[in-house]
Length: 363
Image 1 (cartoon, rainbow, N blue to C red):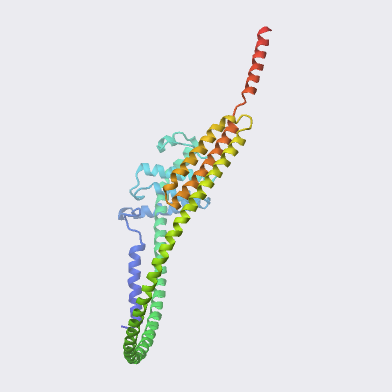
Image 2: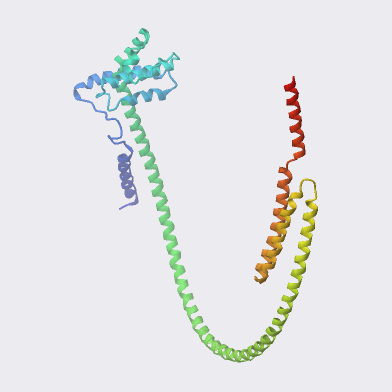
């Protein structure tokens, strides 16, 4: 089969498929059906509706209002009930008033009859005109909606056809490119086979050389292992002697560290007692002295108890406890400084109030 024939067959297939998917199904749109008995009447109504609808729509810029007016028709204009016709006429009536910039009648009820009963005589006459010509306007709107759907389907078919042609052209170009790549691939494959044979010969020779080298490495490794065992024995003896000396040094270090900790604890304890005494000597803070002394003594006892713990844990806990005591002391001092009460001043103010009250009672 020639390429042109294939292209035409594919285009025809896509057109048929697109027509099935682009044209709305009868279930998704309002059905439009005409009986042979009323063809002449429907044609007359459609012409009259076309004339009136075009006249009304040419007077407006708000086309959405006129489109929404048709949405109240549930099935089709032929099967339109009286209530649907009244609702359709009422919406067209409101759109007309809105476009002519007249005051739109207000009606909050969902019953159109109740809304029309509130209209003035002039407004009701205009509504009656729309109601009398409601069938013709509905048929025109229905035929126009059908025409818009048909035009949209045709445009979609044209777009699908153009896309199909472009896809076929790109497919043919890709096919040619693929053939060229396959030809180059065959040439490269032949070259790779010839190079593979050369590589195989080289690998065989290299394998023999590696076997010889492996034998030499094994002999050298045995000699090195024997020498290493001798060295390890000497190192083990040196390590034993070093461990003995380090144990002696560790004992001496522990003794020195214990003495240093005792001296450090004594100095820190004395400094804390002195600072607490000087700080609480200020007026109004003497009562804090017992609390601070209690915290310092507790911290010192805790350090002595922790001597049995490992060095890292003991050092961390001691440092943490010291800074904690300092922080709590400062916090307690600041809190008391801001919350302390001057009883002398309060008594003086209370006495003044009593004097004023006494003077008032005498008067």
